[in-house]
Image (cartoon, rainbow, N blue to C red; front, side, top):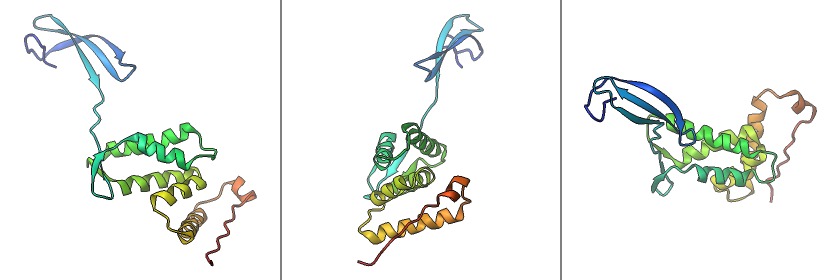
Length: 173
């Protein structure tokens, strides 16, 4: 860290404390050459992620949009708001860790579906119906069939064995 007064590189930290409601660290420093004091702030730098929409438009990633979709899918289900926030936190963290700064809306939708599938089946189907733009009962039937197949691949918990879920899907109209 350069001293803002003499540009000397060596300084010592006199005091560190949390600032901006824990979003940064305030450090009081003293230059080892001119002995003047100055303050620095250390913050996490979030590089913006650009979302490429189906229409090829580009916009900045907004966690509130993802959360809004998840909240709608989870209405009248036992999924807590903390669980919904955790899903969005996981997705946002995964996007920040990527080397590329662009992601398609399709990728984000698939990430949400993968998380919802493990949390609540009803929320998963609701989100899938909007995200995948279901046109009719066949789309629901295919998704339910995929969900049932995925359930068969996973080992069941003891409570699931005592009350197995059954899906009855009729595709004849």
